[in-house]
Amino acid sequence: MRSRVECLNFADLSRTDRALWTNFQAADPSLASPYFSVGYFDAVEAVRPGIQVMRFYEHERPAAFWAYRKGPFGTGRPVAGPMDDLHGIIAHPTVRLDLSHSAVRQHVGGYAFSALPFQQRRHGLIGQYGDGNQVIDMTLGFDAWQTARAEESSNFRREWRKAEKLIEADTTLVRHDVIDPQSFDRLIALKRDAYAQSGHFDIFQLAWPRSLLEQLSKTGDDNARGVLSTLSIDGETAAMVYCMRSATALHYWFPAYEPKFAKQKPGLALLFTLVKWAALEGLQEVHLGLGNSQYKRQMASWMMPVRAGALALSPVQQYATEFTSWGTRIEGRNRFSSVPAKYARKYERMALSGSWRA
Image 1 (cartoon, rainbow, N blue to C red):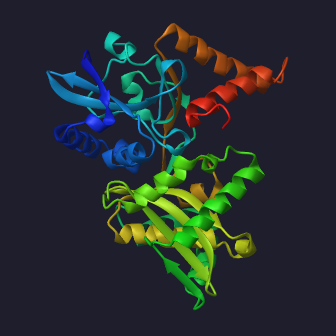
Image 2 (cartoon, rainbow, N blue to C red; image 1 turned 60 degrees about the horizontal axis):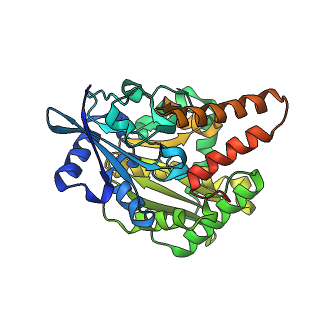
Image 3 (cartoon, helix red, strand yellow; image 1 turned 180 degrees about the horizontal axis):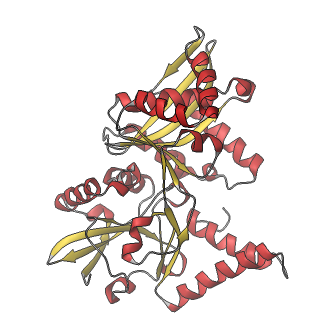
């Protein structure tokens, strides 16, 4: 689709723009996640200003919104970097964008993405298949989902019986959608410990990711609102999870549990109760996020494919994209030196976090 394109700051979107954004999201099932809600971008902009938006027109009417944060070499990137488990263009499912449009190249040299709904290949965002988003289908309710999964998996039946025993114990207390600063602080601490042990980048060494979660907890917008849940055993918090909800979906975001309770699997028990809570709230989907973990496979009704890659529009961006993939290929083959791959990863981390030291 040939379009007229304008670039503006996210904060300058009009009420009409915001209403159209919400309508486009509602019309496309692949955009059900709260990550695509205008309220999520409001929260990100509040703690990390500088989001830019391309507004595409068709027949002189806004037809799509592409929000991004400009990184090194003019590359467009997800607005909250590694906090964005899903990202992409907001458009009606019948709209196809021409991202090779000269007006697009005036504003970005390319676009790097790691978890784009596969339907967005219609815009020329091809990439490669990445880890899918595991989805629990709640359209028929909790009991129907639980029965279907139990019939399909003996492992699910075994885990459900163990979780049910813990949930129904007199010493267990489960709370959903609560304000609990102490549990929230402990959740962040446990996540940081886990990142340190695994060697993964600790997103919470930066200040704004925590601020983003706090901002989402303050909003009254059910299209993008933080939800904290806890499970206590004998009066002691054993597991906690921070999620984000939209009008129709719950995203399972930051789970953690106290190591001393590991054998009782309080995190899994809390997840079972969270799914039931989501069903009672009228939500149609619970998104377990990307990856192929055993508990996700056991619980998910289906997997939403996503794509990862980069769209290179400028010569500089084409070089940067090739450099990153070249370093990764060398490292994968264990040839020559890990130095190119090291600096390729450093470039990616700098772009995601906004800091070369991150």
